[in-house]
Amino acid sequence: MKTIDCDYFVVGSGMAGLMSALHLASYGRVVVATKGRLADCNTNFAQGGICCVMDAADTFDKHARDTMIAGSWLCRRDVVHTICENAPEGIRDLIECGVRFAKKPDGTWDLTREGGHSARRIFHAGDITGEKCEAAMIRRVRRAPIDVREQTIVIDLVMSRRIGLKGANRCVGAYVLDKRTGEIYAIRSPNTILATGGCGKVYLYTCNPDSATGDGIALAWRAGAKIENMEFMQFHPTCLYHPQAKRFLISEAVRGEGAVLVDRHGREFMKKYDPRGSLAPRDVVARSIDSEMKRTGDDCMYLDIRSKGRTYLMTRFPNIYEKCMRFGIDMAKDLIPIVPAAHYTCGGIQATPDGVTSVRGLSAVGECASTGLHGANRLASNSLMEALVCARMTAARLGPHPDSFEKGEPPEIPAWKTGSAVPPDEAVLVTHMWDEIRRLMWDYVGIVRTNKRLARAARRLVTLRREIREYYFRYLVTPDTLELRNLAVCAQLIVKCAQRRHESRGLHYTLDYPRQSKTIRQTVIDGYKG
Image 1 (spheres, rainbow, N blue to C red):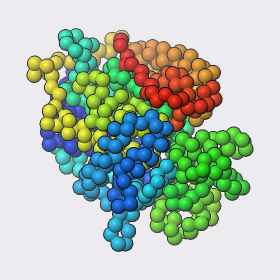
Image 2 (image 1 turned 30 degrees about the horizontal axis):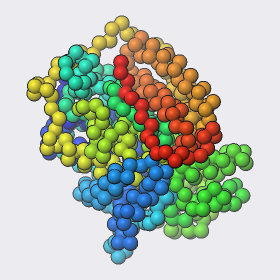
Image 3 (image 1 turned 60 degrees about the vertical axis):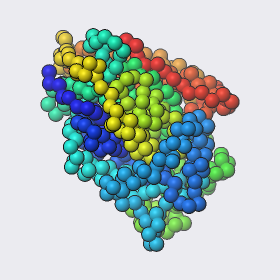
Image 4 (image 1 turned 180 degrees about the vertical axis):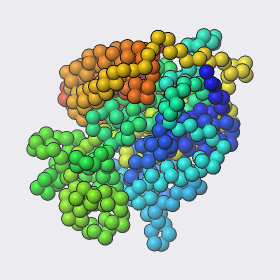
């Protein structure tokens, strides 16, 4: 079996992964693995922008307070202040990569505002900010001394104890599958950095790309890492509702610039749920839309930004305007049909802002990590800010003082064993189990939950995971099987965390415990011990 050696092994190619790789490239050999193309990530789909206090009338304390309020005070206060205060350096990193953020005619930054924010502090590049940032980072990565391995999916992390090494258990690399050739080989490194994004695809309706199957979270859990707060799955309130519009978001910035939520008769309804109206945080807005849909029996609600006029809309939101027009919706004169959809994983691998997890040799950055910034609900546009800051901080920790193998010699990683596994001949089983997980999560573990629904989901997931395990060992591994395996782990972690939280807080709303507890606590699940 082939073994590739490096000083830093980065898994994932979104903002957290690529920025980590760029910062680490000057310290040693870096390998980046991504299971699709470099651009196949959630960062590429981010529309709104990146939070950063730059206006003289704004302060880090105000940003931190907005973050804490949105997160229902479950955020870790010190982490919130650290990440907010380091955001300007992250913005400068992107500018150095060639990102051109929007400016006003007078040359000052054209900052916008989104739900939950008390000031304009969102840097943007039109309404395709993520795409512009991802393209700039990819250009820089292509020119850097970084070994990029696209179409490469991680099967499992290699743990020292599992390969018979003495001493404390630690991560020594990973087994990976080349999707193009079917070859399985090892990437050996004393420093593995997971930057794999979230698990939005665990739900039937999501605005996430197909790659968002929670791979990093499942890999870390199987490696023994602690996972926390998985019950807090954020649903974006305004996903375009159209049979041909797959995964297209109407950015939070549209509401920030004056759009209001209305029913099919054009009547505004948010004020009866929250005094902030259409600018309330995402958890409140998503739950309110869900409530209105259930109350009226309608398939969707609507956004109304007709007051802004065609010229403004085509200039400020050119991509969204063009996309809506493609589906016969003219933002300047029509209501925009929307529904909530699974969007962001606020919990994940328990980690510090500089990437430290409970497993030696394993770091986590970005959406797959739970640093304490988001608490019970992510404030709009804090995600890319977190990715930038934590990538820089993780590289600052690992670069000058990298973790290294004991005795200075890399351990021998055994060849991957296929045993008696045969090529799969019943792919329909994978498809069926994939669909069943996503449907049951949507029906039983969605925006509004109950003990009974969670119990049903938990029972069925035990059976599904057993069936997936049998399939996994019976047949040779395929990308679809690996993603299904990871998806099922994430589904079970979400349910377990939800069952342990006996209150309604942020994104976790349950009819059995409708009030918020006075006690602030994180929900922590220990990693797999097998």
